[in-house]
Length: 378
Image 1 (cartoon, rainbow, N blue to C red):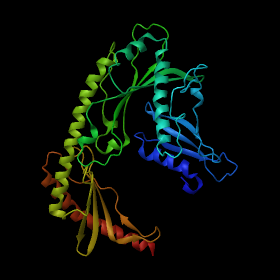
Image 2 (image 1 turned 90 degrees about the horizontal axis):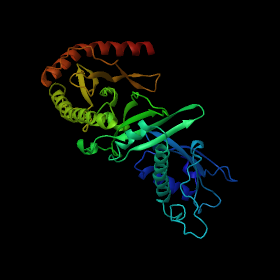
Image 3 (image 1 turned 90 degrees about the vertical axis):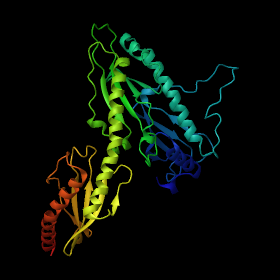
Image 4 (image 1 turned 45 degrees about the vertical axis):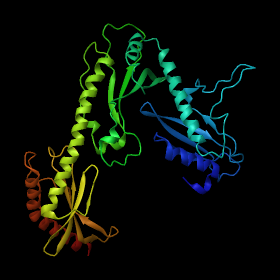
């Protein structure tokens, strides 16, 4: 954001929203609506909802920045009226717009969160009005679960379908990893998509299912490699979820345990290589060691996969003495090295020793490669 081009009051509130919201809200674009085109007083927010994004335009007035902003919802939500006007003579209920205070930096955050909560109620009401008995039954079996978000998708060029974002696992994933610096609460959801059917079907088709997690969770656990349990004929979501959660919890606990396995391996690598220059202290996925062969000094970068030791580490060598003169003096590096002896059944001491033995020979090939690159640059 070009801070100098944003009215101070607007910038303060927008900055507070981005930095303090538990949702990963993004600013997609900013533009000017004032007589001074250099003042950016309007912007589009992409707000996470139901494992997708809803996009709302926030319209301030640079000439009157003390006023509350207008919010313009997407074209598919024309019927969304979060603050309906009451009947004549009735007291209007307070909301974040009616109680606006431009000097309070938290006001925009309060407004967006309030509107998001009202939008969730609006979408649940839309889904409840769908004339689909199977869908109504499925949703009724999940009422006891908290935090489910729903979205009714329809349009001229779109098939009618209902999307659900079902939060999984009651465990606090952030607390499973000691020292984690995750800013947001890590979550795993099951995305469930039901096509709307307005006629009776003897055997309902399986919903489309997809597991989705917070992006940062990939440092611990790979959602993409998790295999969903099969959906059996006649099954409902209330029967499916317990099996899914049991499998998921077991694999996540295994993933947490594997951190210590990787930590032990990195510690053992220090015996032949010396103490690492750098190492990932939380997830133990990476480490860098300083090595030498005669007068040739180089770095050994070690990347450990989540499936370690079933999958072997990836190695990369980086010269401390040879540089690409035509590429900003970037150090010369080797290709990824994984063609070396490995067995997941070895103890970590043998793994470290075999890598060391491999690099004793491989570093000579790398030195030769570095010298060839230098000759080509002359």
